[in-house]
Amino acid sequence: MEDNYTYSNSGEDSPDGTTTGTTTGTTATSGAMTDNSPDASGSTAGTTTGITTGTTGTSSPIIPHESADVQDSMHSDGYEYHIVTSGTSAGTTSTSGTTTGTTSGPTDSSPDALGTGSTTGTSGTTTGSAGGTTGTAGTAGTTVLVGNDSHHNFLEGGDSNDVIHGGSMGDILVGGSSNNTLMGGSGDDVLVGGTVNNSGSNVINGGNGTNTMVAAGPLTQQTDDFLQSNQGVVKDLSADPKLSALANLANSGVSNSGSGSSNTFQIQSGTFHDDIYNFHDATDVLQIQSGINGSGITDLSTLLSHVSISGNNVSVDVGGGSTVTLVGVDIHHLTAANVAIV
Image (cartoon, rainbow, N blue to C red; front, side, top):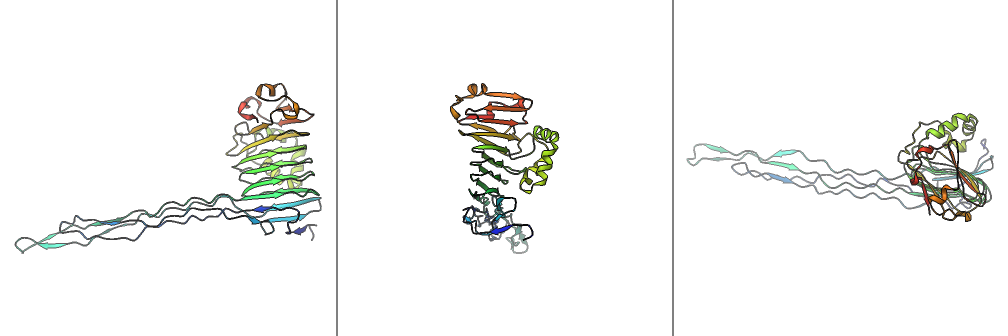
């Protein structure tokens, strides 16, 4: 092929899987109408009761990745690609039936006591009530992607919840728009928690190596400042299709709120240098293993003795020659809520 791609759906190297959420709630409808005619005074009203109930949506079962839902290929750039090409988040919610209109019962005329006139009864009415209940949305499916230890891997999730594991070499892991768990493994990895419009709860763990980790959600002001001062980085992002998620982030609007997305960066014992970008002080958490690498970090007070600040960067010496750096953060808004020692 002209793009030098070799496509394979065998799944022998990467036992991935994906599920798709489906819209299975049905629309409830009102039931049949009954009409009770009025008596001579027109005082008896008819009644209608809705009878249909909306059903609850569910997610579909796991679909093996050998199907078209995950595209596997080996590229000329030395990376094995695993890309989710379908799969959705939660199904939509069904709606209840509408209320029926009002109908009149027939008029009843009867003679007076002398039989010379008539008494006209007023029309009885029938009002249909809304039928059924509202069906709930189907739950989001889950995609599992596992990298090949024999190659560099580019693993990209979709709209479903993503669980992505890198291999033993340097990999690029990119989450989608729902809840994502990214585990880098060995090697120097790039991990992107999710899309700019991500609204999920994401867990990002770089593993060993020199890792670049990026929070899902909108571009923070401090990350934007960093990119404005490093236009070469922006150029590199635009040139590599594997980094399109980061290029999209660099070109998006600025917000420090997180906009519904939250990211937890797991830091565990090992040998690594982690740089974390796009950290939202409003929602994101740096989760550090208690006693990591024999550092003596067991709570917030012992952590502070390992912290150094340079400009808008916050670095933590976590022992064993390993470091974690928050690159471009709003230091004045960081609080104890941004740190968890577990």
